[in-house]
Amino acid sequence: MNSKASKNEIPCIDGIRSLPGFPVVLAGIKDNIITLAAFSFCSFRPPMVMIGIIPSCYSHELVKEVNDFSVNIPTPELLEEVEYCGAISGRDVDKFKKTGLTPIKGKRISSYLIEECPVNLECSVVGTLDVGGSHTWFMGEVVTAYRRGDYDRSHAMMYWQREYRKVGDVIKARRR
Amino acid sequence: MNSKASKNEIPCIDGIRSLPGFPVVLAGIKDNIITLAAFSFCSFRPPMVMIGIIPSCYSHELVKEVNDFSVNIPTPELLEEVEYCGAISGRDVDKFKKTGLTPIKGKRISSYLIEECPVNLECSVVGTLDVGGSHTWFMGEVVTAYRRGDYDRSHAMMYWQREYRKVGDVIKARRR
Image (cartoon, rainbow over all chains, first blue to last red; front, side):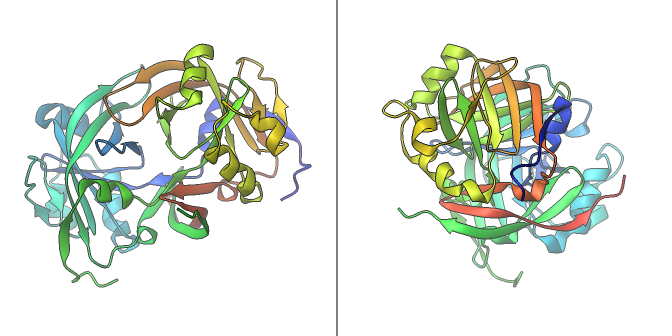
């Protein structure tokens, strides 16, 4: 890359579009599934993650109703199901039935987990953040976690601005 | 991957460790620099991002003092500077001087931007989130953005659990 290329002021929204990508997850909320890249780490102690949902979405009602959610990490083999669950509202269809994904009862939450995903986190909502933006963020403490023995972080997927990506190669591993 | 591998319950913190990665950014806070993968998108309208900082960090004091921050996207060429700014506290050293990175005065914020990074976002703090976890999250509205003409999302870096990664290849681009 030529570091001498000129830098220009751009619309602020294009600054957001310039971000590389975020983990794409399937969130299980009650008996619905929603595909999210508005997903982040939140805390190590206690372990928490957060999901961002647009208020007009069906899942927004559901998470307020049940106060928990599951986070399920899909692999690229599940791309078709991931796209479907991000495109269609659960108000109209049963996404478990339509995709054939297998609902698993949570141990400590009421929302379903997804069997086909190699990592499942049961999350209990501990906070809500609404600062007047397009998304409401729900912070969830991870209360139970499951992982398939053969899972590696590189098996997950990233998403941003209409592009699904693989997890990139390791450039450097920090020493302890 | 063998989807027949068995799934086991794991410690909740290992669920967090199983996440693939997050964009690594250099946040400029006042005249300090901090390396963060505790960084997320927050909102499209208005455009907002959020950064997570451990309360004992020097940058935590600084962001509360100046109420703004810059987000600067580094490329792998800056890995040494990125590692340095994530390892050393700005309480003791001037990281701009030590790394040779060039501070640029913000147009609408008091924190400095970093010239060598191809994308710079000026962010004004609009909210703070503390739900009792290890990190306090500061939500910033993007009030000015700059991008180098040759920048592409694939030039950024990801980080998680001691691994710096490239941005992965596109698996599929969604049609509009």
